[in-house]
Amino acid sequence: METTSIQKETELERSNDLFQVIQNRRSIRKYKPGDIPDVDLKRILEAARLAPSAENGQPWRFILVKEQSTKELLAQPSTQSFISNANIIVVVLGDTSTSCCPSATWTTRDPMIATEHLVLAATALGYGSCWIANYQSRPKKWVDEVKQVLKIPESMHIVVLVALGIPDEYPKPRSRKKLQELSFDEIFGNPMYFH
Ligand SMILES: Cc1cc2nc3c(=O)[nH]c(=O)nc-3n(C[C@H](O)[C@H](O)[C@H](O)COP(=O)(O)O)c2cc1C
Image 1 (cartoon, rainbow, N blue to C red):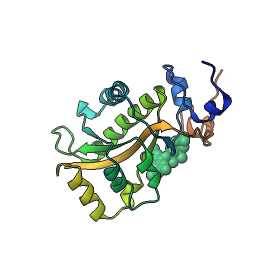
Image 2 (image 1 turned 135 degrees about the vertical axis):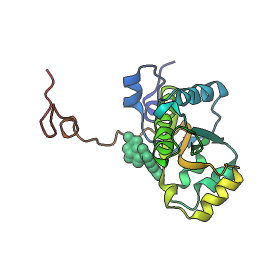
Image 3 (image 1 turned 90 degrees about the vertical axis):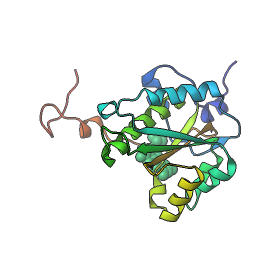
Image 4 (image 1 turned 45 degrees about the vertical axis):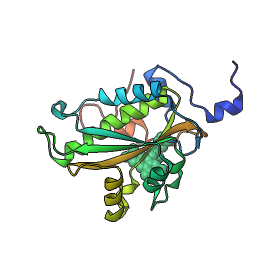
């Protein structure tokens, strides 16, 4: 079926090409109602499961929240109310009880690596997503309530939330620093030239 230009503005096209997926990914903050089929969810989570981690500790856990009242709890008190319209909110947890690396450094960093795998896999399948880290500024009372409602064990901390859903927008790419500002040849500050 031919894709109309209106569809193109709001839809993420499926792609298996990694570089295309990286280019296609946007933070999506508007979602269409609808369900993400289990077959896709499984592939998205599988991509997260395969992420690398320090000493292969895999200190990540994911809770998939679909229940509207729970999504609303996750969205408040916050300026990020759009997340309650996401089809799913993924609550990414860090497991501080893993024997290899209980330090908060890895139990935060490793889950974030897995989260980007998850986000890219979702993009590859045509879904929109948005990292949400601003919950960190929310009161402890909220964190305690979320932990209680989601039955999150004491040894787990919330690393980040990811809104996931069927995109209803496809924003223009946000600007990025130039490669020359970020990468150097042999020593810091030495510009990199590509032949
Ligand atoms: C760790 C992290 C935390 C983020 N937290 C939020 C957030 O709380 N709310 C939000 O709307 N976007 C959040 N974002 C999305 C960024 O704003 C977004 O990635 C950035 O502006 C670049 O836009 P793009 O993702 O569309 O390329 C976050 C992204 C990352 C990686």
